[in-house]
Image 1: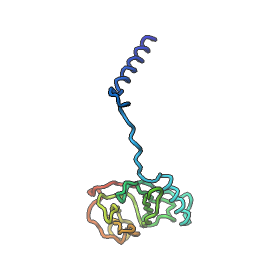
Image 2: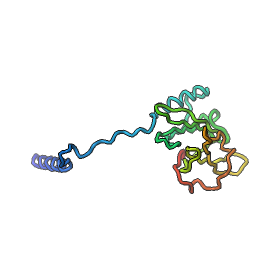
Image 3: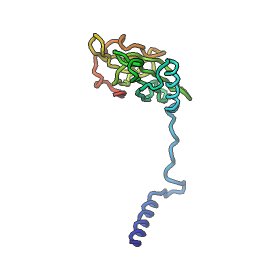
Image 4: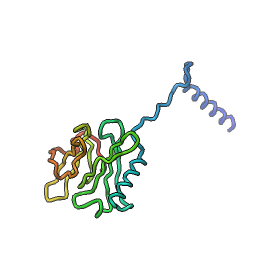
Length: 180
């Protein structure tokens, strides 16, 4: 048993040695520096907590959360879609969504959007430098439809029900699906 363990250890060391660099420049692999994708999740959560408090929302509010670069600056912005309590953040037309822009060291609230239900799609198409957000509008006396929430230079529309039907199924639009 001892000879077998010794042979296995020697084999391992030989394989490990074979993975090393054979040049005189030092080790074969150099770690890549961590890429910054904007402020941390904790900073987004902190701003959301402040937002909930300022809105006099329940501290036990529930939400879904994702990060995505909406404005092409390389930093991941934050999108929160509230799920409850239903009577506070949500109604017959959907729930409140909060969009935050990642700045150099923190977040800022871009705007709130009402009447949102998942799934949503972050489109590859952009308007005024920000990606369009495709939303399914339903729950009214109107037919269900898909609309593109387009950035107007300052914010996204507050109410998706005011937007025009894009006439395309969400599955046929290139982009990233969120809040399925």
